[in-house]
Picture 1: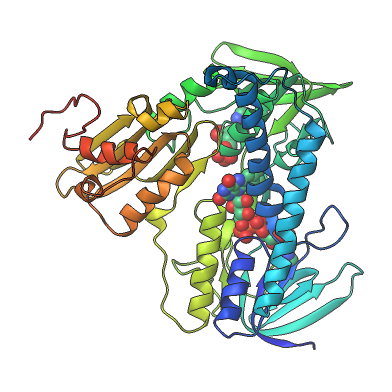
Picture 2 (picture 1 turned 180 degrees about the vertical axis):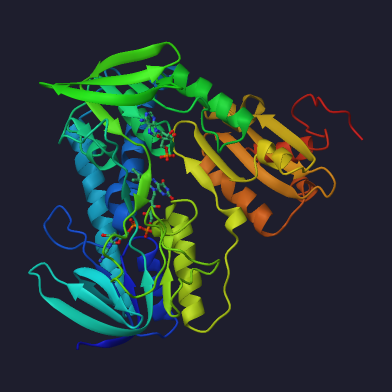
Length: 479
Ligand code: FAD
Ligand code: AMP
């Protein structure tokens, strides 16, 4: 038997590493087990988010957006940039450098906070034991008073499109292309599919997105989703809805994809295909048989509102439990669980978790959509403001999109904030704070916003809830 800890965390993604750091800060003797092997053949921390998720995708989105601006938009600003070209390999090398810096940074934070980093594959052997198998197959059992499972998720694969290295890839493979494919197919118009499709569309690929559902971004406010679809189409993304992929065949250097739409069976040929049909929990083998931790048929670990599993002292957080698969949701759960283990009261507001799609413009939302509220029988008032009427948006050359605020018609309480526009991902924090503090639309309307900022659109949308927007003609009758 090896060391004994107060807490052992399995997995060092944004759920696990945050839980481990917080637990150590609370004075608990903490270890974090990680098995991810990075590009240099060594164990790296940071999980999906830092290695193959949030950060590398944003590095490519930022680079490809700047490329588009330089190529197509600079002229409008009077900048003569001449011929602009993209060195894809250099863009990828920059992305890899960012990943290396950040993953190394987590290891540094572990040291600074006194978290013991254990390398290997962890398994909950009993309610108070974690068995870790290292790269050479040697198993060591550690004891812990509390265990946190933060094993994360992996991409879903579907039988019609088996992966083939470099040709038919998942999101991880799509972050590694070393040149721009001419014809790119993307299966799934979810967040990841739209972001990755955007990267390569901006760099010159002809991108077709095949989506089985006939509803575009059903989780987003209807008006915002409609505007987003229009803007992405204008950029050249060919989004085919109601197009279910049924098969694929690799022919030499090409892949032929079969799909069914309203007109029957169809076929398209691509140079690369990205399969982005969702993610699934990565929990197989993480809990030994007989421990008593309940999971569902898809592998999600059952937890209550405070991430307690069916076994006292064993917690689970992040992508391997219910709720949105988002890094900040995993991290907040990590902090909550560490605080609970340390003996503090802690809870999370699952109704105030923001979502962002990092396309251009960005799409960001928190809380209820107008359609959700109506379906729940809540009478709503909606205030909307277009960026086309914002001085800052004009100065920024970014007048597309709008901000919408959904408020309870009776109490004026803000139920949701939905934005499509430049920097929407930054602006949404205002909506999160409004929901967190239970504020009314009037509270936002009475708040002083800096001028000129994109955020003024949120202010104007709040004013518009009562028909009092200043910088546009109000459709509603003023009271
Ligand atoms: P993970 O990050 O998956 O980490 C789990 C860790 O546990 C991994 O390091 C894994 O190796 C380790 N592990 C698993 N089993 C074991 C074991 N038995 N022993 C030891 N270690 C183990 N989210 C956002 O919020 N914003 C975004 O912009 C965003 N963009 C994304 C883009 C892409 C392309 C992808 C794929 C995902 C994106 N996500 C984004 C989702 C985000 O990455 C995840 O929600 C987040 O990483 C989940 O954190 P986690 O800690 O639960 O799991
Ligand atoms: P998300 O779960 O948000 O990452 O989105 C995944 C998307 O992939 C969903 O919108 C699914 O409808 C879509 N999808 C899943 N299977 C298929 C398929 N066979 N063909 C086309 N789209 C699919």
